[in-house]
Amino acid sequence: MVYPTKEARPCFRTYESDFHDEGISLKAGLYYHGVSNHNRSLEDERISDPIKIIASIRDSNDDCYLRAEIISSHGFSSTIDIPNESLIHDMQGAWIRLLGRKGFTFEHEDGRLPLDKRKRLECYIKAEAKSAPLKSLITSVGWSDQDFILPHTTIAKNPNSPKLYAESQEFSDYRAKGTLSDWKNSIANYAQGNHFTMIAIMAALAGSILKPIGLKGGGIHFYGKSSTGKTTHLNVASTVWGSEDFVKTWDGSAKGIEAAALLHSDTVFCLDEAHLCLPADLKQSIYKLSDGRGRLRSTKEGGMQRVLNFRVSILSTGENSLDDILQEGGIRSHAGQAVRILNIKADNAPYHSFHDIKQFDSSKDFVNHLKELCTQNYGVAGIEFVKNLIRTDLKVLDELLRVIEAEFTGLQLSSQEARGARLIATYGVAGLLGIEFGILPWTRENVIDTVVHIVQSYQTSLGASGEQLEYKKIYQNIVQCIEKHSNSRFQPIAKGSNTSVAVSNRLGWIEEKVDGSIDYYFTASGLREASGGASTADLRCALEAINGFKGKHKTTGNPQFQKKIHGQNFKVYLIDFDCIQQHVYGNLD
Image 1 (spheres, rainbow, N blue to C red):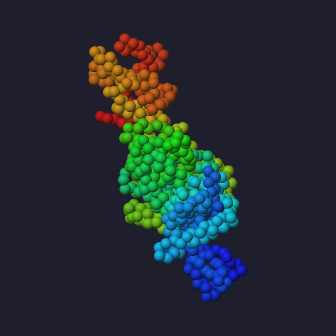
Image 2 (image 1 turned 90 degrees about the vertical axis):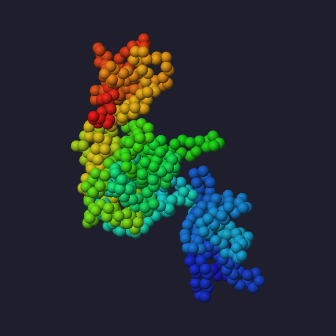
Image 3 (image 1 turned 45 degrees about the vertical axis):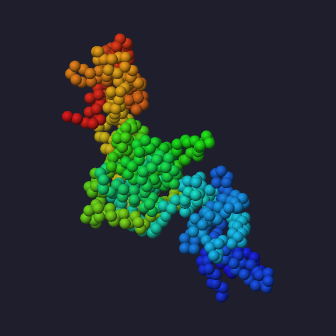
């Protein structure tokens, strides 16, 4: 910064630090450099703390702002977006208060702000705005065309990308500490050989390849006993993009979780303690997060709120699977939920949630060391990954995906399991790219072994009996429906029962046999509802696979047959409740 000559005045200058030059000493700040009208001497008037206009920005609604960078009197640097209209129409100084909330102060005496100081600052801002580069304001992190937008940086092929992240959405958890080498030699190195930790890191990197691969979202839910190290996997994954504060909890509404997802688009969304989320919000969040689109909501005036769009790679933890949490809350789970966020039991490794605790005597010591490393090295690996990805021919993604999926050939995956396995394979692609980019200190064999292990763990978590996942959901839903509604939505058909009693939303009929057993006769629509909305074909296949029908048509063998009940003929299904219940709960004797 050059001290202005008499010929260069009047002018403004911002000094980010104290200025000293040839006997001139100025405190850091914004100055108005003028010439005295009285004796033509040089005058240096300090107006405020340092401030610079770095861009003129326009958002998706064509509203215009000026992006200012300020340094408070305490030395803290921050940015703020000043609405253009406030500089024209605001007589109350709302934009001044915006600056004040960031710690910005004026040079003043007696605790009062002289009007001339404000006018000087306003003139400076308007003058700087004329030459400020024009930028587009982006309201979510992640990919915007070919640029990758983060709160603190933009990664683009064109270094002069006309895009900025919205200051109003600033998310300080995207911070960096340490170097890539430090992160590789510590966190990534200790993760090697630990399948759950490795897949968590790969999932964090994979957020940035969901878009080019064509996935809307999805993730993994690690579940198992408390204090086994599950949350540590989330802590490690968070270091790919930011600090340990990157890990959030499920403690929020579906709407709040959607808003948080917008701040983690194309990176990783770590959610701890699934039991803290209300079951209804949990169910809605599973679908919305994996589909990449928030819920349609209206405004108070009857219009539509902006629908949130995001792509998130989700990592979640809890003591129970997401299915169990939903069912405990009285909400039926569906097969589609379990292929969106995959339930992986993560407390059955040799050392609780870890396979290799290196030189440590216990898993507790290993976890404590990993957590300490997570506070020292973070926020660099994801940025370096995207910088390399932008320079990479994206055709390689499909090639690597085929290489990894070929390793699943001998696993005999059902159609539902194959959908979950494709998401895990995508994580593997990120792992292989991380090695190629020099970010991960692992081998290709490490990545392949981990991906196959996680797919096998996914199969085990679904159950080892070999039925398709959607069939299991049908059994669970039927049992849950009967347990909940056997006394309210089934009409008794025993002789002498009161047939005049109306049954609201009847599912079918209940008949107590002489031996004390109970038969359940369903209408076609009642059985579809009890199954959670399965098609008639899937229902028949699922129940016939376990001999779940007790009665069939005498000549056709069709599980739906005609039965006279209280003098009327009805087409019904007679199910074997004991058989289905045993299939869900196991042998109850």
